[in-house]
Image 1 (cartoon, rainbow, N blue to C red):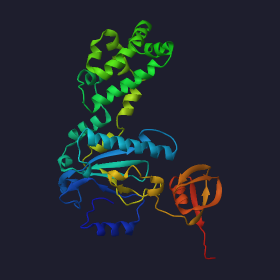
Image 2 (image 1 turned 90 degrees about the horizontal axis):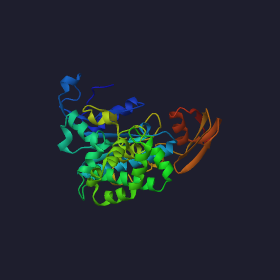
Image 3 (image 1 turned 180 degrees about the vertical axis):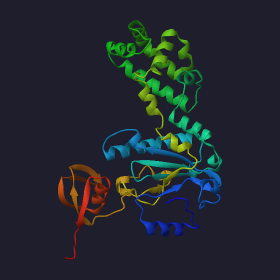
Image 4 (image 1 turned 45 degrees about the vertical axis):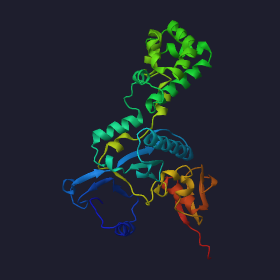
Length: 340
């Protein structure tokens, strides 16, 4: 159901309770008349700036590993918003999505009336979309933060790694790039110690060294086969860009349950993220035992305990049963009657 407005939070909660929906969303936009039946009649007034982080877009792995990875992305994003974009952390609302991600709501008034193109510029910066490595080096100045220094650090670590490897291996890696032959690769490898020093003292002079450096750096920062590119991507925040540019986005309602995990959608302060553990803090159900029919073997952690679930019929804590059923790996087979 859409195009619904409420006069108070209590009214909204009563409405949700009456429906018990599998998923609940709300609009991040502000409207003069939110309950109007058409979008044109609502009169858009602005929207929060939203960053959506989802582990599904980044990696594959165990549920625990994905939660840990996406928490790291959230911490990286908050650092960029705070230390590079100068956003007041008091205006940020952080929400665990209930699944495998976080929503970062920037409610600073200065961003509320940004159009999609302006929001695109912000998320492009955060995600490193369209950055020019050569310009980042050329325009570097001492004390300059942001992508200038991030790229310098990425390149330094990459060259330091190359310097520890056998020369034959380094030549093979570099000469696999278009425009870089064996002779050029060997010459570049011999210059690595000097280049590392320059990156720490005068990065803007590196591309002025000679054609070998310019050619190899150009290939490293543009060729699909380059082993440097994954490190550059890792330095960026891997946010879902279309969410940020959308000025009428529907997003999960804090306090509701996520139907694919059974976890709560948990709002929190920025300072609470460090100690937040979704496998404990977002669990809505408890220890009451239920019977499930497990479709396959599965191992995972929940509420501070590890579980090895065999295939078949068994008793588990309700929180475990709900999680497995929501994930499509089991069916509830009944509730134990402890009174009998």
